[in-house]
Length: 475
Image (cartoon, one colour):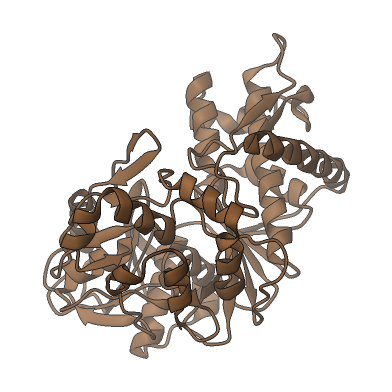
């Protein structure tokens, strides 16, 4: 069997597959997030313990040897480790907002745009550049004690395998220090962010993916393990998004829009990033928005609605949600794609005593759909669109999304990130797998022409409301 490990923000999963890509078993463990005053942190030992637990569970449920294991996980943030991969402090999550004042300053003085023009990375508070600069000013002792500032999957890889040193891959390194054309760190960007004296903390880039053998925790000793790519490009692999112009929408905690491309264009409004892949000359134009299922989760918990009620409620109110509108930017660090606005917050409008829970739920789903359309258009989508993530469990929401986006959706269910991690590992180890069979969609959702026209106008109105909200956020 083949094992994929996906170390998510709130859930750690391991999935076992047979040689044809059929999912044999999945094990999952939740992990905590500590939120306080704009800080969002995670306990690295808890995360690693969850990885070991899900691996032990999934390998015990499926008999037979593990041919290889692929590892992926959440990107960005700062995971400070010592030489053995042990935590120096709690990990700062990609959702962290403590460095928003730095991003504000860099937006004002031109540093933000200069970095984008060099690397294609539009920095946001939870990416490594601002976080490392913030820690350098407010917690320098942690940086002094660290051997490397890595990413989630890299910490797990080093501890699973006992690798002698921490490394990362070109995908995780893409934000914000990596030149996407040379696939090496741009030292001028390091200098612009005031981090030249911390340059040694940037983990060496392993290109191609790093490999090693498991030490025996969670996986049998000697199992071949490959580190990376991180979850966004891993999902693109797992959904079969490799041809230029084709796209992927991940409806998860964050709403990630990815479009495959053979070109790097550093003009236009600075936003998103270019993710390097294992293939030189092939990138993913990424617009990983902060908005996502977390916005819907907040509305559901606030209104007392259970997830299993969503489909029924979407059927109880018409497109347009009886005039209720939601700008779904609930993240404490604002928004990062297809624009960067650290102080942007969610807004609800058109609500009255006559508004129902169904109206609020539909308006939120529509708002998330408009945000997705904004991101996909900015990323340059011209081909087919695959969709994956937790949101695909709602057929009604997928129909709504297809209508809002105005195009068919290739729905890919299951553990898509883990599937992509296995495909990346197989490529690295020279193991032939049928990628077409591994990435076949579960279903295809076709849009309704009448609703497509309605939502096209709704999207234009969304952009007008968003522009006004961005102006207020800067006041």
